[in-house]
Length: 168
Image (cartoon, rainbow, N blue to C red; front, side, top):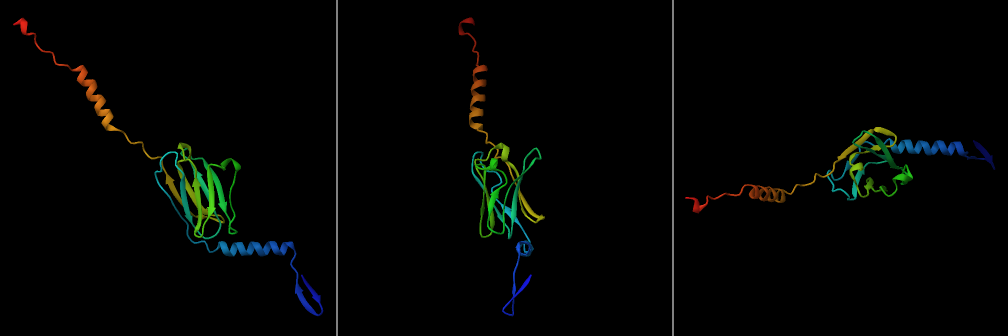
């Protein structure tokens, strides 16, 4: 809308115009997202805190796919540097932090229910994404104790019987 004041034209934007301007800025900025990369440990110890790094320009989201193929949308970071979890139930389990290169997802006290596939994708273009499969670190077997117990059990059951000297 143009208004004339003292023979000069001033541009006045209403709320709809402002909204459209913001949407155009976001779309222009998001069009620059060309690649996404996620990185982190593949076999962290049970109970540890795990940090995944998502390198991306623009708004991004984190999701999780568990071993039962149930997907959970965790949260996102916007171009305005706002990061948040989608559900308050995820507070204490996850944290998303904006970085210069993209964002980090911290998984607190990872347990068997939260091992699986974590993905980072562009918020407005889900075809731009990367995933990482985080598996539970296999428990190491202590073969020393197993072998010692095996030897002791068999040593006791296979005792040598000597002939009686007085019999012959």
